[in-house]
Structure formats: structure tokens, C-alpha cells
Length: 228
Image (tube, rainbow, N blue to C red; front, side, top):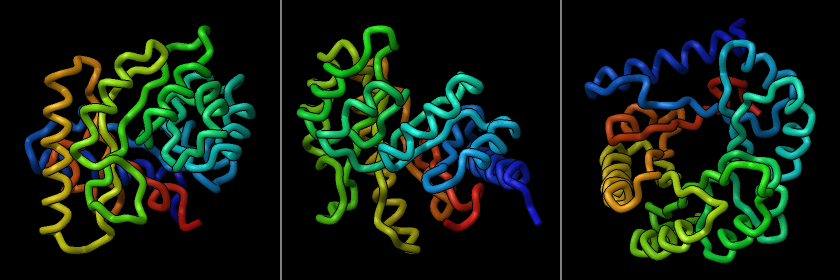
């Protein structure tokens, strides 16, 4: 039976191979371990295997884990990757290092107001609804620029890039099309804002295509921690 350390090593090897296949350096791509619904003991096991970036989808669960681990593991980088209601922004602003799912001016302004002065600015990614599915969160491609303008005017937020969840499909053509569109948006944003360096896209099933299209951060959950 494989351990969490084994599965992190396998995931990292997949990232390395995907990067080599498109002549990129594996050092350009961060593995974000999605630890939602998993016990604190699993996070510690991943940490002991060298993992430092963890993604949480649920506000209260993430807060509980951060509070339990921050004293002994202060170098863990906590990423919020789930949907966020405006009444939960304070927890994100006070506890997390990154927020990947920003899609509204109001949420940006609340996060900025609630970010403690003692902490560095909150790193944020704009979530883009690249598949244009009504059931998904995120802004339309045309709305990225105005939201980026708002974010960059807020002193306690740092705009780091874009995040997207593409269509759930095995159709490589659709995957390629959506990832390519996101990369174009990312390149445009990067030209305007020097802080932009993160393209958060790709999971276990579509990691190779995401990396070929410029992903700098892939989100891996069950392939590390097992099925939920």
C-alpha cells in the first residue's frame, strides 16, 4: 500500500515529466495539495514528505486546521480554493495566505478591509469561468480587466494571477481550447501587472495539458490523500 509520501513523489514525477514534454522547467510549477475533508494527520504526513502548499475548500474546516497547525508548522502556505460567501471573508482575510476564487469587487473590498495590518497582503487569483457554465463561479473573460483594476487599487491584496476549473470532460480538444484561452488572458494580465505570476489550472485528470498551456500551479487531491 502506498503512503502519502509515495503519492506526493508520484505526483511530483508526473509534473516533472509533463514539464519536460513541453520544454519547461519543473521548478516553474507548484504542486498544491488539496487537503479538504482530510484529517490533520494527513497534512502532517504530507508536510513531513516536503509538501508546504495546501488547499482548502471549506472556510471553517480550513480555519480549524490552520489554528491547529500554525504554531508547529509556521511555514505551511494555506490556499483557499473554494467558493466564498461575503459573510465568511473575515476568516479568509485573517488566516489564509492565498485566495484563488475571487470573482466579485465586493469580496475583494471586504478581504482588503479585513486583512490584518500585521500580515503581508493576501495573495489573490481571479477565478475565470472559462467554460462559461452557469453552474460555475468565476468572471467572464471580458470582466477580468475591470476586477484586476479594483484588486490592484487595494493595498492589502496582491494580484497574483488567474484560476479556472475547466469543463469536466475527457475531450482533449475542449481541454486544450479552454486552457489556451486562459493562458492568453494570463499573458495579457502579466503584461499590465508585474505582480502577476500564477496560473492556477490543472488537476489529476488534465494536468499534462494544463502544464503544456503554461500552468504554474496544479491542484491535486485524491491522487495524494486517497478518495474522499
